[in-house]
Length: 375
Image (tube, rainbow, N blue to C red; front, side):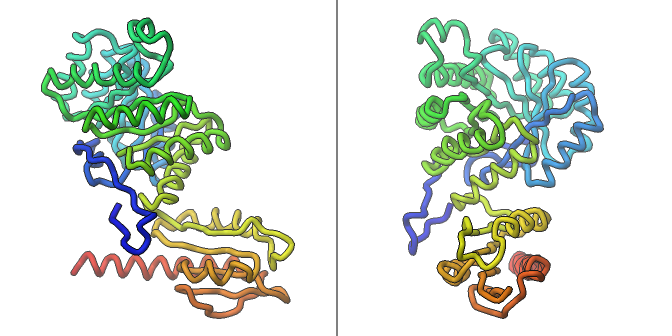
């Protein structure tokens, strides 16, 4: 993130990591923090899996992971990779041969779990396949599946055990002259995850994949992820991330972007600033915002929209947004464009009008960006 001399309290100093490629997506270094999700379809159902990958990509996912638990899944992977608009990561547990098959099928990255992938000889075969087929590797440590000797050493899952597991596998990859890897140390406990990631960040320059594993449902999982991942990102830790929710993968992507947007680390789509509403509101703020969130999902251009129910904070918030609407009286409110009061609009026509103004502003910003790129 570039430094802001006017508002230095917004600055985030990202940890310096080396960069690898996951397909055509750079991870680490000065690359944008990428957003991932994982399909929950049966992977061998190619049509369903491709459809879900496409929906995730449309929502903004940079990378999508698919589970490959059996040979039918790795056979399906070839077509999934061919049809996918984003790089595909093959999720490997227990069966190292699935990793080899996934590499042969064209996976951009192989996720292996040190706790269940097997001994170093098996890992060496996975590394050889990754080298032969241009795959990167993610070392994916989970608190719930640590190696037996580490559990015996530490007595229970803990940050030290998770980091030791990850560093042991980094050593194996490096001993085999393989350096295209990233690493994660996930736990469902926010405190354990945060402590492990902080320790890991000091111990390696590898790109870090952030996640709070098994975070829960849409509401609880979002809150846990926002706390855990948000704090790590604020500290400058993290190069790619996945929000793990018991929900539609599209929701994971949305939450991931909202976390990044709230920290100014990624900008995509319309950032709606809205009040919680009260008796002063001049229109139904909650219903309006719900409707606008759906109506504006197609906008990919980074921009801001303020929807404020009354004139207490409305004009002030509108000063800092691209488009704004502030409730007034007598069934109408004020439309703001580029921070300035522009014209009044009746409440019953307000939603259609705001959508029109946002689309118009998005087109303008896209044209300006294209012109700047051409110069």
